[in-house]
Length: 234
Image 1 (cartoon, helix red, strand yellow):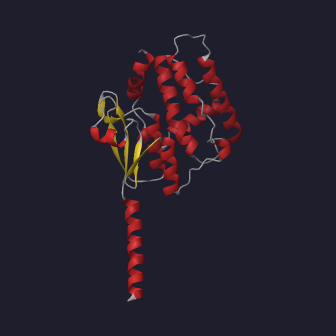
Image 2 (cartoon, helix red, strand yellow):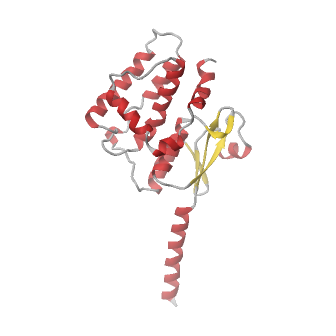
Image 3 (cartoon, helix red, strand yellow):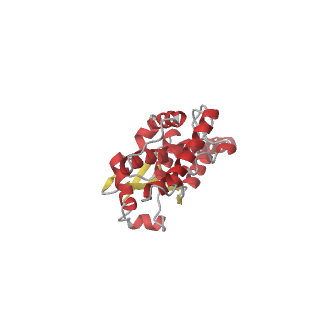
């Protein structure tokens, strides 16, 4: 009977493992501005969604209207920040932390970026926001963004097509939504495009935007524009 008991425990553990791997993760992300039933423009939310898609993890999406946050959401995310993901009954904020946990809990396929490449492109989003909000064409914000894109160009030229070579890693899944904002928002508000000379950056953007996971998780352009409008013209 001990053997029977051991077999039962083994089978039950196996069943639990299979069952828990099939249970969908819960994720709360930003809804579109003015369209609370449509996926919104938060690049950090998209980064997590991209990771879930690329790892083929089943998930349920809760769209949060950030101008009218539901009570349950404020209870699980007191700061009202998205994205948050529910791991083992506990809601976890911060896309960096979430992506790290996804990597730990769902190691296949691996998206760990080699440490020496993990900060590639990390200043692009900040310089983009400064340039987007700038009302003075001589304040150096455009040059700062171009300098960051030039640095990415040099890196991709030496290591591409993705940041760490042939395979997509976490750093690419973080950069893809940010570059989408660069392209859409600057195109709309400043009639600005990434310089043609940055051929590796252009190729990189094309590769990222063509991924099935990206197509599935990106916000429509009009919602990217609607999201930035109050910040560009306060």
